Amino acid sequence: MITRRRTRRRFERRFQRLLPVALPVVLPVAIAGLAPAALGAQAGHVHYLRSVQYDFHVPERWAELRDRIAAQSAASMVLLFDGSRSIMMPDPEEAEEARGGGAGGSDRMDRRALGMALRLRMASASRSDQEDLLQAYVDFGSGAITETREFMGRTFLIAGDRPTYQWKLGTEQREFLGYMVQKATAVHDGAEIEAWFTPQIPVQAGPGEYGGLPGLILVLSLDGGHLLYSATEVNLDGLGDVEIAPPTEGEMVTREEYEALVAEKLEEIRATRGAGNRRRPFDGGLR
Image (cartoon, rainbow, N blue to C red; front, side, top):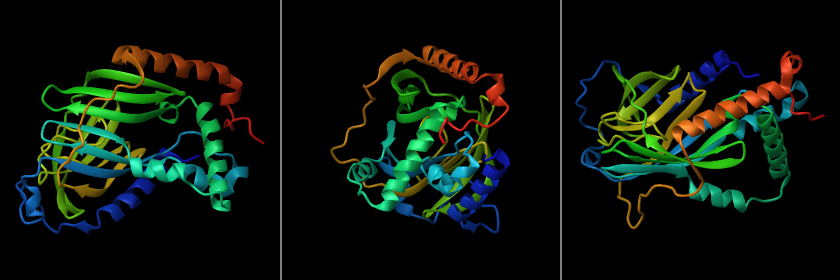
């Protein structure tokens, strides 16, 4: 099982690779000198790599597939934004590549790992194993957020207010993708959040529901990397003919209704597994 301690160490190693240049001195909050054309930019898109550390146990007999199973948790996402709103969604180019994949041995191995990961996820009582954020639309002015989330094979459309994060701005700053980023931290619903944002792109946007900082979030992690978003490309050439609009597909529910459903279904999984099964790692019934 990938423990939280191992997850934190793995995140720290990945994060050091993502932010290779540590500043020798603390800089003032007003940053100048890097990517000056970005200072007035208000519209564009950002590609993120999203990775989630699964909570389910991978049996030892699947050791040769463990890394491939873990790799199934990585996905490319794209955030479109202007000065007043944003929407994040799966990268359409990656989705197209997945639909056109080949049939080689490596592809067959990845499909096998994907199938195993899916069965293990279905038997897990961890919310992060059962839930995927598909789209998130945010109106900066009103604070409204509309999401599509997949939970246990069902797609839900959830409208409400974006969470208000009590961000604490740190003094630590680094260079990332040609921008100077500043560290901010918060605790929300018991989760520790670490964000690196750039005031050089002065929009309140970020991956998913996260934002509200005086600049675009380029790297964000929860609980030491259990969930990690890291930008891989920033494009500030505008949106062209693309329109930012709320998602419309999915079973419409309120936030309260959705949270109650999630709690109920996860409790059902725990009850189904029973106390006897919880004493040993669940393997999805595969042999």
